Image (tube, rainbow, N blue to C red; front, side, top):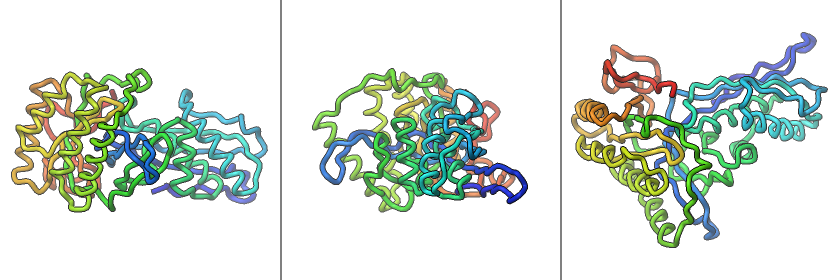
Length: 347
């Protein structure tokens, strides 16, 4: 949902200002190379949505200034600045105005480098803020196109949590898997000590025909899991995808993580294929959920894997572990242990 605009007041001398917001995600459920409708190979992914941290942008447009007179605060958010300039050109063409400069201000609570879509969230928030300053609301396809031009690949955060197989390098939806993921409870954690992952430094492995067949099988199973609301099947798909991702990421804790998931009766695990964030997936309908989650937290701690936050893929006002005494609106659930913060730490 895009925050309300702050239009200029006629005659008041105020500059047209817009705001925008974009969420983050918690890594991928599935990532690989798939076939599009024409049978062409295409890199694609399905992200795990997470409510909570996000990016907020404010864009103050300065009509009459040169387009290159565009600044961003904090400095260094070059992808968001590039996205804002592209969005200005798009919106100016739609409204018949001349492109101009302005100031983009970003605020984000998303940890950087963990594979949670921090850069894409900044980019989408920036695009939405620019559009808002023009009194426009750009459709998701346009936002995706601008985002890909700004950062070469993007996550499907402009689609607001719908489960889709998304071609991140092309900015297009390969398949809408359904209206919503099966209900899940996720115990988040970080691997590799939470160190940021340099995705550009990762080795590139060309997908073989056998890889394509394996990815397409996982796609079929995930489609079935979404259609039937089968959390267990979704967990199996996510675990299989995470295991394939190990060929590149090689997280030292991965075997321990999957063993913990099996021991506590979780549905599976998921990881960010371009970061260090990971999650143990639980079916909320499984008996003894609180006990399973507490056992999971103790096991993660015993293996030196930092737990971060528990959250759900469905809207709830009840803390999974803490009960009604710790309600906080629609805040995702968080574990309450003396050694674990309820929110993602600033890593």
